[in-house]
Image (cartoon, rainbow, N blue to C red; front, side, top):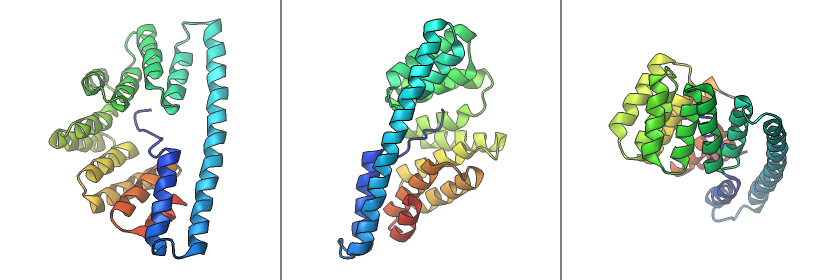
Amino acid sequence: LGFDLGLLGGERFALLVVQLAGAHAGVLGDTSRFAATIAQVIKLGAANLTAADDLDRRLNEQDARLRLDPSDAVAHQNRAVIWFQKREFDKAIADLTEVIRLTKDSAVAYNNRGTAYLKMGTFGKALADYNRAIELGYRKAYADRGLAYAQTGKYDLAFADFDRAIALDPRYFAAFANRAKTYVMQSRLDLAVEDFDKAIVLNPDLAALYKERGEARFLNNDYQNAIADMA
């Protein structure tokens, strides 16, 4: 949960694809290419509806588990992940707080709650939770704390955390992905693409990485490769 898998929401992605079509086709002059790009938007919309239905089904399953046993920490954790994917971060925080209470300090739950706080822009609480996760031995929290530092403009601390995360686990894709996102914040787009490349090598099945790399390529005026990433 520490790395946001929903890097591009459906509406934002649709807008970006249309912008890509216009840039690549010369102000929408290439109607066949534009039509193909719009087809991608329609396909994405259908996929989003299917995913939403699946989330609701999974949510109902976890609700049923918790009605039978309100102290089921695994069900609270599972439901927190679903709330996070539905972007209902306050509800994710409530479930993760319960996980922490039930498990007597779960490092992963602290890290995940920190990420939920980060999504809400509550940076102080996010950093406190990441710090606690690190104290409890959860080394992946360095990559997530780095992103929190980046979003508060503390880039030196952010890059130090990314370097630490990579030194501890050179195969942790999220450390490279979060560093890439930080490079995008700084408009250092070539470096961002390089780090997204590394993240994709480590986790080639995560579609969100391709979308984020596509956005970086779009911002870097690399429209052809950006469209390939969005396909």
